[in-house]
Length: 369
Ligand code: SAH
Image (cartoon, rainbow, N blue to C red; front, side, top):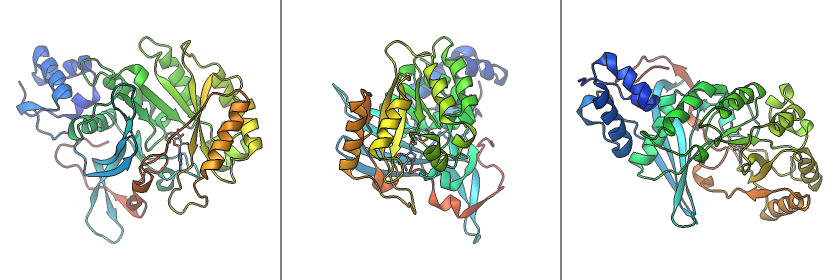
């Protein structure tokens, strides 16, 4: 049996894929299976591995009424160096563990990143300000679950792709990560506990629709950042809309293969003076009338150097009431972790934007992207 195994394939492959991969390395299928299950269940790798397990380099904690919110950074391969020549640092992914009040016991949702930075350029989002640095690999996405489960020690019942990045810009890696996360011999998450949130790229949605129609994927949840009631406003705050306008997006959502009890989550970041007027609520309700959805109103969390403030509580309540008058099904997302920049749309290391990427090679067996 091997003693120099790399941990990345265990994180990036399903149980069956890992067994196939391990064979040519001289690891018997029975033993490979045992390593896999033990790794995911206990977080321990045993003596066979030469590379370290994912370990957060920083954890920031904010109290919330439902428990502490933890944002953590996980080093991934690739380095950045300040233009002033100071010490180089590993790139980091960012994830957030969010406590949710359950009926019986406390549940945790893990918000994961699919990319470092993002290419979508949405005007209200912190991550957009850093641009796209690179996409994450499946093992780097699953590594975020590993760190939350085995370093922070939380039971994770839900995973949402709402951290840094546009999941549909990295769709194959995201789908592979979901295969691993839902493998019953691995993290064993329920497919119904996984949500992908997207700006609504039509090509990516077409690929995702094909996947959702295959066995085992029907319960995957879809969230779409609608964020505006019309093309004029949406194109202003979300550049993707200039190429893929709302009418086509809404048509795609109207035809989405939903289970009978399910709904699409239509996210709407409420930004003062931009999209919070009563007429906007009227227009939004009409726009989504044919889509089986829950409108998730998210009070805007100011990014760094934001031109807009957070909305007043009364404005949020008024907007939601107005939508409900039209018969819409509406939920309000509770803001958690705003002061550690852990809330929606606030992920993204400020430092990276001031640095340039340098090629420093690869250390410690960490796989290059
Ligand atoms: N790229 C994906 C996932 C990341 S953003 C997407 O756009 O859906 C996750 C959610 O946070 C999206 O609904 C997004 O619109 C919202 N969001 C982005 N910036 C925000 C901010 N500053 N305040 C509140 N929500 C924000």
